[in-house]
Amino acid sequence: MRLALVSDIHANFDALAAVADLLESADRVVCLGDCVGYYRQVNEVLDYLRRLEPVCVLGNHDLFALTNCPPTANPAVRAGVEHAAATMTPQNRAWLGSLPAMWAGRLGGALVLAAHGSPWRPFDDYLYAGDGRLPRLAEFEVDLVALGQTHRAFVSAEGGPRVVSPGSVGQPRDLPGSASVVLLDTTDMDPVLVRRPVEPGDAPEGTAGPGRGEG
Image (cartoon, rainbow, N blue to C red; front, side):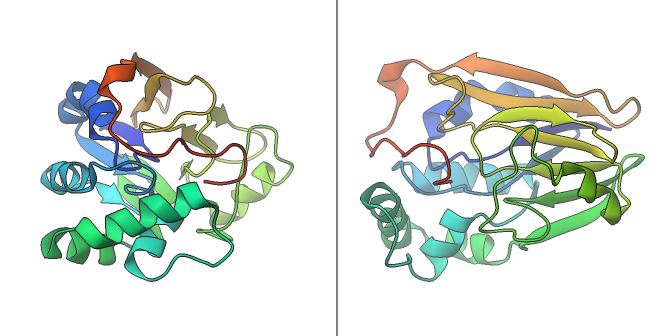
């Protein structure tokens, strides 16, 4: 089975459109959360994702848009969350609200665990390349752990399952101006990172996001 892994779209439909052909040619899309927040193309992104029928988990910005933004959130986070909460259609709100905090199951021949932050703290955690906790993911006894949140792409297999972070479609922090997707065939489990340029003029109206640790 050919998987396309994406994360942290953040209501940036122009960036999502840059990788749409990759998503539509995959057998299954896995979306690792933060569909909304920061940018303004909320319903365009959610309408498109719903049509793809992906495996999708809830991110922290998604959760904030469905509930409340924490009082400690910075202005960029708050602005995007409040815009999403105010503009989501009822259908998109219902779909977003139906997403799980984590997902585990078989895709093709692989057992996959998907979470936004980490399996231990799905909404709050950040697992970067080289994190000392990566080998602990072996406790979940799966073939692939797919994570988002950091907006930075990496692949790891340090003493446990293959761990993939596809980076961010809507707001990458390792290579700004690109949208990233990881393609993976479950027959060989060999992830391929693909980055597509997004022209500055395509970026929707919104507030630029913060740096490391702000999701």
